Image (cartoon, rainbow, N blue to C red):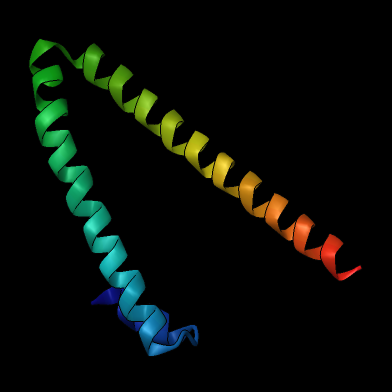
Amino acid sequence: MNMSIVGKMIGLRADTVVSAVVEGSLTIALVIAFLSNVGFPLLKLGIGYFIIFMLLMVQFMCLIYVIIRHIRARQMENMLAQRS
């Protein structure tokens, strides 16, 4: 509910706010489900395994973000090259 209020305050359209809230909710649900299936057994093995797992997950997410930004930059370059 807070994100919908923030989205409207910064001037986003209603459909954009709804899709962002739904996407965020689904992402959090998947992360919690994944951590409950994988994270708790690692935590039972030892806190070190869990910390290493979490660090690897953060690195993986950063890698995905960099790849997506790279793909979008290439698309923008191609689009600008076609206009010229």
